[in-house]
Length: 388
Image (cartoon, rainbow, N blue to C red; front, side, top):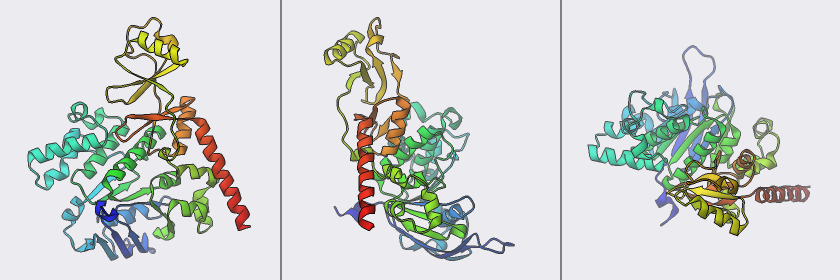
C-alpha cells in the first residue's frame, strides 16, 4: 500500500488569513499562510500572546477569520456550516474540558451521538477508544471526571476528540497542566496513537522541547503569528533562522538532539529477570540466586512492568502481591532518549521499556544513552570542523 493511502488525515491550507478584533490598531494574526501536510503533526510554538492559539482556532472557526481562506481536504472551511465543520475536527484542550456531570463513556460518546450513530455503534466506539488510549472500559467507563487523575482526564479528552474518527485533530496545550512524568507519558501515548491513526494534527505549545519531541514540522511564531521558521525539528535545531528562533532553541542544542532520537532507535537490553505476579516468592528467589541477580521485574497479566523486587524481600514473603518497589517511571519505544535519561535519574538505574500496548520490551541503560550523547558530540564537532 502506498504511504498516502495509509494516511487518514487531510491537508490543511491557510491562505493570507488575518484576524482583526474591533477597536484594536494591529491585527492579532496578520496575513498568515501555511500548508499543514496530511497525516503529520505540525506544532505551533511561540511566546504567550503571539497569536498561535488564535490561528489554530480559526481552523475550526471557534474564532472567525476577518479575511483569508482556509481549506481542509480541499474544502473551503468558511463555506461549511460551522457545526458540521466542528464535528469533523477533533479538539483537545488543556485540563481536558470534560463535562463534569457526564461519565467517561458519555463524554467520549458526545460527538458520535450528535452525528446520529445508533446506540450499539456508539458503545462499541467508546470501548474501542478507551482501549486505544489505555483506559480499561470495565474500570473507567462509569467514572466521572472528578474520579480521575489529571493524566487520565487528558486521555479521555483525546479519546473524545477522536471518537468520530475526524481527519483533523487540533490540540491546544493539552498536556500543559499535568506533572512532568505524566506529561511525558501522554506525549508518548499521542505519538503511539499517531503511528496507528496518521491524523493531521495541529498542536499548540509554548514548550520548545515538547515541539521538538512531537512535531514532524515546527512553526516558530512571532508577534501576530508571523512565521519566523517553519521546518523539521532537525533543521531548526541545526540552523535557527534568526536570533529569536535561536533563543527558543536555547543552550545545549546538541543535548536537545536526544529529543530527536527515540528509545526504539537504540539497542535495548534483555538481561533483566522478569517474573509474573502469580509466581511464588521462593521460586523467584531461586531464579535470582541462580542468575546471580539482586532484582526481579514483576509483570502483570498483560506483561506490563509494575515493580522491582529485591532478593532480600523474598525471604519470608508468602506472595509477590504488593511486594517490592513500584515503578515511578517507565518509558516506551516512542519516548525520546531525553525522557529515558530523566527516567533513569528518577529511578536510579536502568529503566523498563514498554511496547505499543504497554507490554515489556526490554530495559534501557545509562551507558547506552551516554554513548549516544558522545556520538552526537563527535558528529557535531566533526561537522563544525568541515564547515570551518
